Length: 387
Image 1 (cartoon, one colour):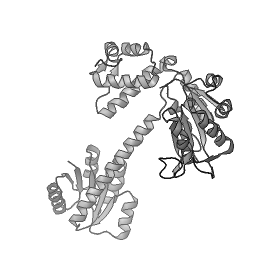
Image 2 (image 1 turned 30 degrees about the vertical axis):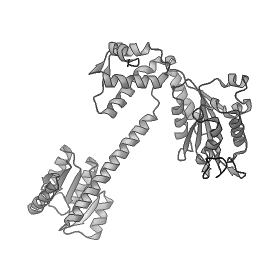
Image 3 (image 1 turned 90 degrees about the vertical axis):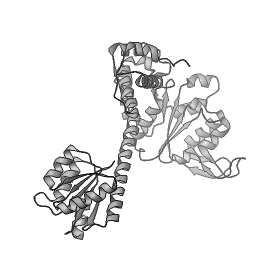
Image 4 (image 1 turned 120 degrees about the horizontal axis):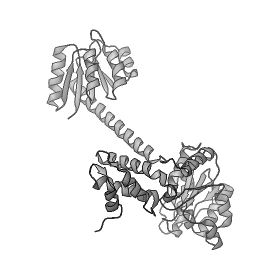
């Protein structure tokens, strides 16, 4: 049930509005002056605040100013003595809307609903931004991670091509996103392509686009990832799995800063920063003639190696607690604490799946444990449960 505060020095107005809004199934509180209203705002959370402008003592504009500092609740100003200048001033100071007395009840109810909808959308946006921001954090204080962070700060503002290496699950994509976010291209698109997940016969169309009718299923023209990333960053994940024919076209695009769509003849200029990643040893792949040496040298201006989790065990406590907080927040439950022996148990695990595996294990512990996580819980739940 939505909670509304009505601030007005006229008892008849307060009571009339309360009766109307309670008839609409709102919970309503009343304040007869500004001082009382501010105390109520400090103690309660309101979905909407209705505030008269002309009041003895603290007037409505002062209430509005203080309310803006105390709460994100939308404030609707009401007055029988207002002018256009007053309404404009109220909006400039942060009021959601201004309604003249006596209020048109239909307009009042619609304004209240719209104000609550806007507040709900803003709260959801803030939550999403918090979740997205959290997903981009690089958690840990180990020397290896500190070195990576310092390297990102140095190379991100440049346009140097970067090759990120490391095992699956170590966070190579996170490094790529950080490089983009701290670059001069952060305002432009970040386009990610998983080269291992796209069939070899489709990778060229994915990267360079195609013209209508260029192959059986090409029913319309499509821009490729190079074009979509124009002005921004193109992240080629698992570049070691790209076919040799696609490698040749990528090399040409890097040399000329131009691409040609599949089935097309027109050369299209592209301005992209290339970041690549792989879990393979590309020098070994070159020796086996599965990767072009000239492309390797084009891509590896800067090399960043992301260490396996077993090589940075000192980060496990902070990572485990971070993943626990995130999981409990998403599931609306209290954060569980790890006993010291439980952390020791986590450090002894092989972590072949690296940080991705640790995140899954902590999520499992958060769901299946009560109150705290003990060493016996790690032994019991760290491995996938039997069916």
